[in-house]
Length: 156
Length: 227
Image 1 (cartoon, rainbow over the protein chains, first blue to last red):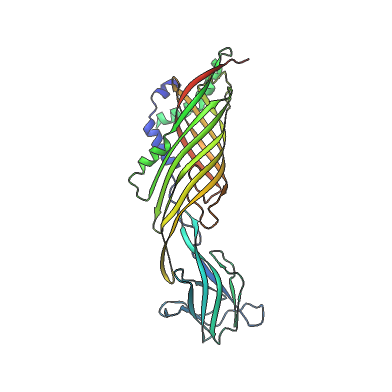
Image 2: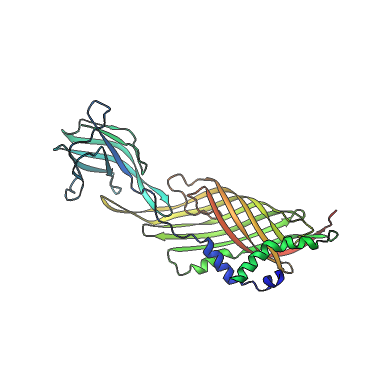
């Protein structure tokens, strides 16, 4: 029985079956691909997290595409950076008072996985803020990645 | 399908079935073996029309029986990997070498140089280049495209490779090997890990399985008389 089987090995069929068995079926991308500045809102001078009663955020010159639009209850704002520039500015309106917040950063590519491909990570170098809504900003973690951890604190 | 099943079953059972007919007095030939992998080329041709996935893998090995149950093995190959999906294209190519030992778990008198069911242990070294000719990401600020230029890397890995081999004609064998690899080191950095390392596999992960299917030509060079 054994010799018979070996004499009639259907090699092409067997090889194709093996290829199919071991070929990598494309998987869906399950991981987080957006690297965002995670900004937490604090009451000025305290360690108390408090969401503004109303929060509006949009990129400077992009007022038709708001990230937050008079949104209540936002304790952590997620702000994407422009990977094709070294800085980008946000208009940030806290309880009706408007500021402009500018981030300066460097950008580098990062491979997430074969399924998801690449994203851009950033290193936050500095910031400027103009206006009266924000009292202070503290950089807690300058590495802007897909990891869900606080990057800056906004005191208002 | 019955033939495939029969073949697999025969590969599993054939060597052991002979143990019942073993003749202890027969000398066991020690052999030099030269093998060529057919899985890589077949995989390449079955994906020839798939523009998003083209991997050409050429691989072979040379082994020398140290005694009736151990063989020193050197394996080498070349791989040209190309993968593309909606947001990036990736290419890597390079050569690799693996060195190690095969341990035949079948008793010598039952496998007189013809049958092998055992496990190999390998150390692997891969020298390769990789590049990303296109990548794209969209976010709030719009789409960003870029490239990552070609760079050269090295990777070290170890491997356990259980497999089966049987002689189908005089001095001509065939068999398959499952590769279970662990990546020890790669100098690609943590941000731009290699999607495919020649000889290893998925460089994003520290464990990478694989499969080879070999045709092997054996050259007896010495007879070993069992005590």
